[in-house]
Length: 111
Image 1: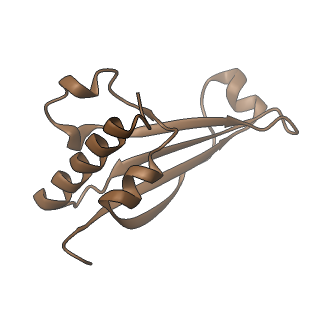
Image 2 (image 1 turned 120 degrees about the vertical axis):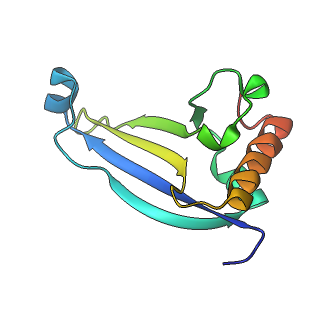
């Protein structure tokens, strides 16, 4: 891994109509690990919703995660995706994560 890269985890979970009705998903999320640079990560979180509503006031950006939901009109279900900083991330990776969030904020890619 390059010293200018950050590891993060992408979780994806499929919700069926039955899962949505009962409010609990019956499947485990699929998860993938990725390593991106600041620019790649900022571009990746574009269009996702942050877990904190006031990112400018958030002191510890390493605790912020991003998610989005997309509807599947054919089946009536939905897909939920979330991006998290890797749980074994180094302090340097946590700083890179924060830099990517600030860059995306500056560009107006996240609210």
